[in-house]
Image (cartoon, rainbow, N blue to C red; front, top):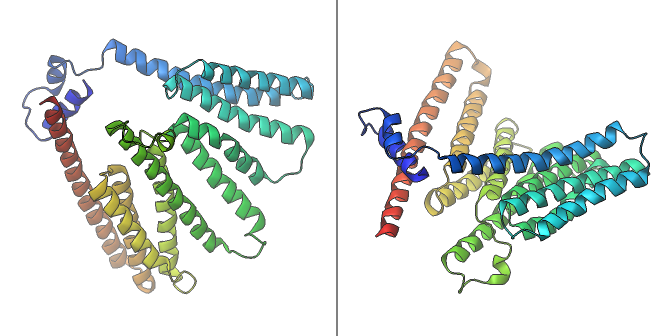
Length: 347
């Protein structure tokens, strides 16, 4: 049904359907059926329910902090975590319900760490909470093989790095300046990108042939690229920021320009010719527009009059239009490839 709907919408976009598109969707039964809506609503309620329970526990302890003893707080929180673990043990692995239970345990782990720190006043810095939280949920992310858990893990690691660098200003308190923090984030998130792409590659091997695949490696494989996309987007934001700093302060960030060009070229080649990813290619287009805009602003820094602003505005409009047309063309090619693969599978 989804493939038919995508194909009809593609034909309508190309002007191949002269009549009403809604009638074409209804005639081919391409609208969501009742079971599709039921599946969507049930999964939505599972995800929001797990998050609501975890967040509700935090607010419950905050509201009843003085009315409950510390043992009652720990007992209640750990009992809910054990219940989530029991539910996970009774479900099949790698299902949505099992992933939701793991997500609930991961969120409650953070609540448990916050409760421990608040109860015993350990005096730890905020970055340690998120770093330990990320370390504790790492085995669950590996077991669950879920991009949702890995995205939470990525967020925790990056947040702990931000808080650490903001607290200590580097490894010894004076080693790094604020501009050099970006290099750390770029290196870390690029490593994450490579790591998750390897896991996705293992997942592709598993889908093609389970017999020839390495089962020990495939036990942690991923079936989608959402975690890799998040890592790439964070890395892209970081390298774009580095390039912008290099434009206005080339002395302190002399390597910003070459690193930006190299990183973007590698990402463009990988996600254009190896794995077509319109999300990351859109990010590359946006990054290029930003860098060109700031470059023009630097070039006309001394003569920023109406003419310069008009030129910069026209450049933004032209680059945005060209990027949109190119991405739209890639989207049509991707749709054609999908339809071709479906026809070959049916044959």
